[in-house]
Length: 231
Image (cartoon, rainbow, N blue to C red):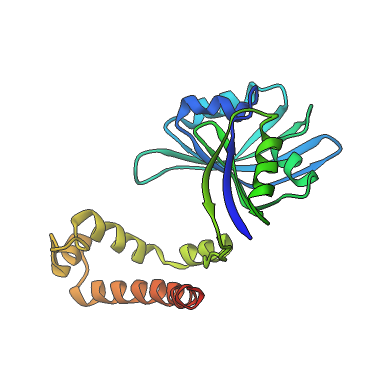
């Protein structure tokens, strides 16, 4: 078996129009029923308001509800939206699934293209998928992996549980330490200097550091060990 990342620019759809807004996104979840569509879309862009305008102006989209929105560390806008609408034609994802292809993971939006990771029997089946998607627009193959290998990654819920479990004071310590260059090589500040900026003792700062480091290492280590075993 093999896996391939196949991308199609869905001509005439709002996903293709997002090519002008430097958008990366993922359909976190979606469902179809009786020509109705509900989907959860997470995107990063320079301008989330402009992206929502593009999506909302499309005939097939009826409502957009913003679930969350924040600024990333790179200064970009990240937002998660719940979309509801009606389908006037079969989408690329539906077409793949109706014809028996097996997409792995969420559909991605990259440079105005919808990208699918497909699990395939051989290159002949890959050619069939390309021909199928060509009915929607230009198709590119971004990656082909000859041997299927399961990705060893924490689930979204596991990541969320970990991130939510870090107390505010430990998060504040991490942010201060990163901003001041404590984790740089060589270090730009000492632990004492980070502690002084936070108005805490060096011992308290050390405890914050050890606790958050232990939590992160204990979370990641099982996945690191599994990844080595899978090689």
